[in-house]
Image 1 (cartoon, rainbow, N blue to C red):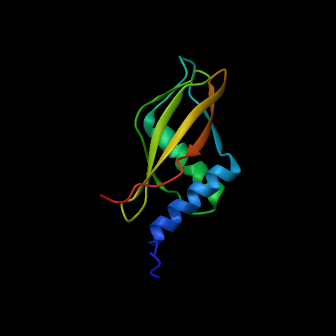
Image 2: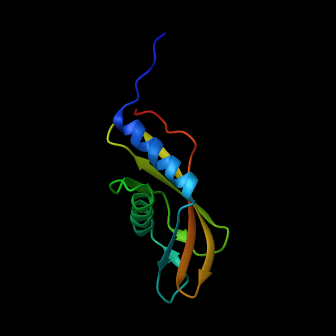
Length: 116
């Protein structure tokens, strides 16, 4: 019986996904006095920092696809890319907004997509 080997990046993605799912990662960012909105760059950086803190691994490469508007229930999508090119989707969901601070939860998809 042949057992497939998983690359180090796949293991890393699995560890991040497991860490996010088990710990229930969340974040909070202060955005200023106008309508609360978090830029996709700042969101990606915050998600990467929270994932690193949750898993105890180096900060991953995260890209978010749109700004996150600070309204409870709003969601956004980000992508974590491993060194081998495989990708793991991440959803952020606004849990509360307090003055100029957006609080959100982070949940990784169940499975990574292979490198293209």
